[in-house]
Amino acid sequence: MFSFFRTIRKALFETHMFRMYLGYALGEILLVIIGILIALQINNWNEANQARELELRQLAEIKDALAADYIYFNEHIAMRNGYVSDSIEFFENYILTGELDDTRVNQQFARLGWYFQVQFNASPFDALKSSGLDKITNPDLRQGLVHLYDFIYPRYTQFFQSIIESSLEIFEAEAEVLLGDYELVIIDGKIDDYRRPINTDDLATNPNFLGAYISAKNRLLSTNRYIDEIKIEMLNTIELLDQELESET
Image (cartoon, rainbow, N blue to C red):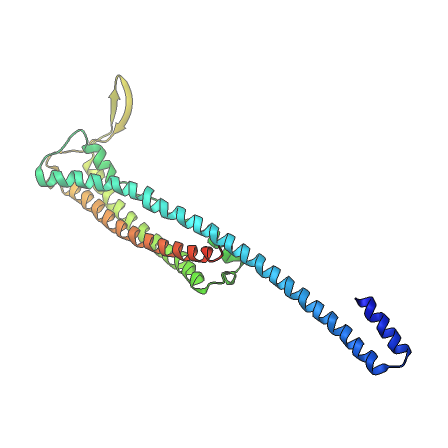
């Protein structure tokens, strides 16, 4: 096409038809400009598509990590708190009825001191954050992720740590007074375990036992409440991520 314009331009110039020659020259320039603009537009479109694909991959990674966090809280932590709840029920039944299964008392008391580690996988979000949160094109989703990872997670981590540490401090101090000396557990002529048996005399009125029991119960109630709250935050953010990811399907 350009050779065609050059042929016409040469013919016009040689016949001194300058005005017509100028028109063809301007037309050729205009065609070149349009071609450049189209190429730039295509390049911008390709870059936008690549940026969007990268954004969606990173959002999918965040969703997977968040789903794993939810499972950890909903299953693992719930299981450990479930054991504590069973032990509280065991001793609550003893306090109310006076009936105590001596074969289970040591195990149930030990479980009153069970707790859990608070952990979240924020690595995918941190990776996206380090490359620029402006890559998240949906402002509601961007705000939701920042709210969860930079406010909710740190805040609730502090709540859990404070509750667990203060409760265990009380529980361990009371247990130290309540428990006896270490003794070996021998089964079938072999040493199977060792333990510090609990003194069950007047256990229901023993202030050390009651202190340990109450600290465990308060820890369970407080952590369960915060677990329910943070799970709601997780599910709300997962829903936002699902909406964004499904918008491209």
